[in-house]
Every structure is written in structure tokens, then in C-alpha cells.
Length: 63
Image 1 (cartoon, rainbow, N blue to C red):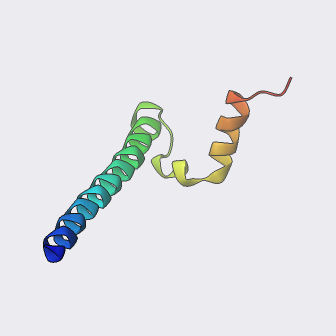
Image 2: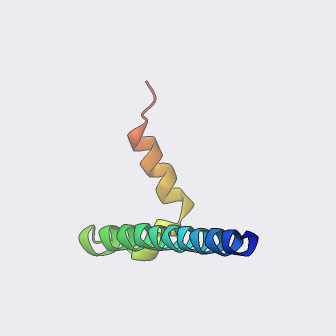
């Protein structure tokens, strides 16, 4: 009984991790596609901190 429970939890945790990894990969790929192809910029620039600082500044302007 205990071994079945551990195996069941292991499978569930593995599936959860797989879904999280695929979700992160999809978000990164979507950002690269959107910024690089649709936006006409360098797709690798999404990993640049200054880009995200500019985005946050535009989204939260100081009054």
C-alpha cells in the first residue's frame, strides 16, 4: 500500500514538473516569437534586463 502511494505521488509530481517546464518553455518561445518576428526586434533581447526595465517603466509611469 505504501509503495503504491509513493509511486502514485512520484508520477503526479513528475507530471506536474513536466507541465511547468513546458509552460515556461512556451512562454519563452512566445516572447521570442512576438518580440523577434512580430515586433521586428532581436529575439534574444528578451533576456536583456534593460528591456524589461523599459517595459515596466512604460507600464507604471511615475506621476
